[in-house]
Image 1 (cartoon, one colour):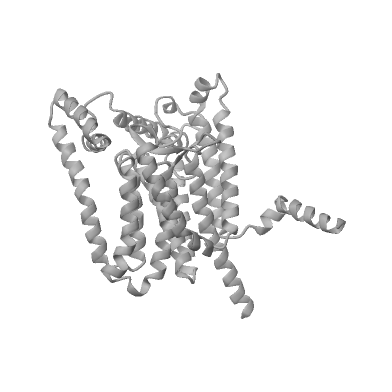
Image 2 (spheres, rainbow, N blue to C red; image 1 turned 30 degrees about the horizontal axis):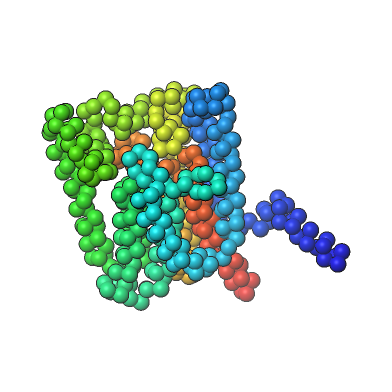
Length: 419
């Protein structure tokens, strides 16, 4: 009996032993290194960008957000670690259940969620009193489910009724539920899914038809922005009031497109103000930046720690630092493509590729907004922006990718041993 207790205690002790944890860590070592690099950059950038905010909100305690970010990073690393230990075939079994659960959550969020910035994107989690953006869960669930469907329908993948419709339906439903409160996320998610469908051998003709249909509302927004630009200031204000009453977020979308095309006609336009402050930060940064912690624009740029953190990175570390961040995401995508090529099973290959594409596209969109190559979207920079549930879901996605990589390594090891 005593021996049994000793064995149990020893096993528990080994579970939390750092050497034991490191010895069980598998997967792509380069991706692990990239995650650590981005986490370190996140600590520096978030600490710098939140100094004044923390001083105002916490009576001079400028380290409060730094400690919160450290907590999120530690939690995120643990999520990656435990997710990568799970055999990726488990995610295939759970994909349909998680996807079906995410849909009612999106509906609930749309009608009863926490409203911020004219949009209902969050639900408040009980007990811990944190808000969760349900689109993050839905995005992860959709890619798991889509990878499962693509892997199972390869024999009929070119057929419109048997192959394409079952694949595009969950994508269309998810994007339609996300779009009313967060159009940019819905568009980026849809684009990522279409890229995965193209790689999964879906008919190019069917994909192009889908793209054409999706362009119709975008052309409407551009047309509405052009028409609004030609109105006088008083007429524009009247249209804004009517549009906000009748169609909710549509006015915000039209305003963002208009600000992107023409700039702002009003000093109070928040989107244009953010973009202009980001431009100032980039111009101050130059090639090598003003140095860590020396940003001045952080005191004027809204969401400097979140949506526009890339501008603060460029200001403090220059175009060199900005290019380095971009290089990290490109290497991450390249390593995930290698996992896709090496994985012998379709589900694991499509799962790793789909999750990597959505993270890479999100990063590119965030950086494009910062340098004014894309209208303001509100998406964060993965693993760099200040932590929240979005940070945790990003870590879970990376853990799943590493789970596929770990199993690929094990299979290749068995083949080598057999030879």
